[in-house]
Length: 301
Image (tube, rainbow, N blue to C red):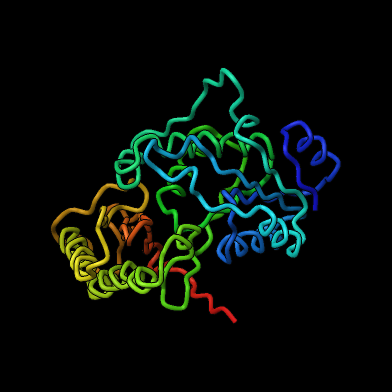
């Protein structure tokens, strides 16, 4: 495994390693969820590149850029154990040199949910992902379903800009109690960690009534909101029951029968953002093609 810090040396080194490439973009502080993406990439490509870059342009002025957890040595040990071929670990100055002026803006699907709560976030995400795609030149890129809106934004960008790369979305990995794996979980103290699975319980509560035929968007959102509000340590940012492609909220009235998804047939995304103590946690369940993609539970030894 080689770790490279500049665009020029990365491109030169990659050019000497022919074969199909999979890219796993990360911000580091890797956990089992990240590693599952790497394993999937290794299974489907000749070679794998992982980027580790805490992207400053996707953080707002009051967000946790400086405090974002980092452990590069541990990250590299984990990636070497999986026999990753190349790691791209640039500095902000490499990615955004002096007089940098160009950004990628995806329109409608960035205006709601995380986009409404974190203005400018997806401008930073789309820009850095587009740059990584151009630098690495992989055939496939791997992302986790936990960041549901991010996957929608990236797929929209790739489609609209005719980027020659396949986007592979992999299931959310969860702790044994259902909490979605996230680098931000390290911010949870013991008391708030016990409270954090309330997101999973709220999603399951809405899933249960959906499975019984409920399609009233307001009712689904109300169920999730009620579960979150029953936990004193949780502070709700938003809940959503939306079309999984457009991210438009489902109407407040029953529509399709249980055999269908949304009125457009494009799937339903149940999602939320909740502050539990210091960290702001997000989670989602996706209903698509007649089945739920809720994530996989990982039991640690």
